[in-house]
Length: 138
Image 1 (cartoon, rainbow, N blue to C red):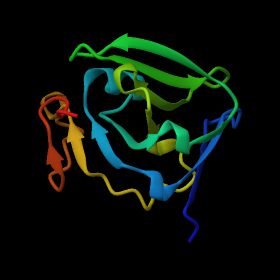
Image 2: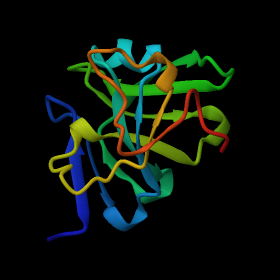
Image 3: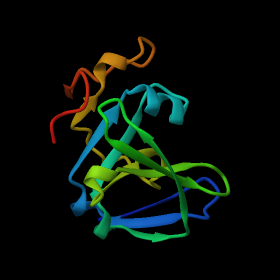
C-alpha cells in the first residue's frame, strides 16, 4: 500500500497529493458552517501541514468568522464548486483536507468530533471518539 494520498475536486481541475505520514490528526466537525458547506451533518477532514501538500490547480477561498472568532477560509474548485480543503487564518500553516475528496480515505482514523453541541440527531457524533462541545483548545 502506498503512503501517497491523492485526491481531487469533482471535475478534476484541482488535484493534490501528500504523504500519509504527514497527517497530524483527523476529525469530524459538526458546526453549523460545516453542515451548510457540506449539505450534510458534518465535515470530515485530515489536518496536514500546508508545506506537505502538492497541489495542481487553483482553489477559490471564501472566508468567514467562525463561532469562536477565528477566520476560516474554505477552498473550493472554481469550476465545479467542490470543497477541497480549508484553513484557519490564525493557524495558516495547517490545511484541513476534506476526506471525501481523497481517492482512497479508508485508512483515515478519526481522532475526535468538534462542535458536538451542534450535531444533528440524524447525524450524531461518533461515540467511539472524543467529543468536544465546541472547538478544542489548540
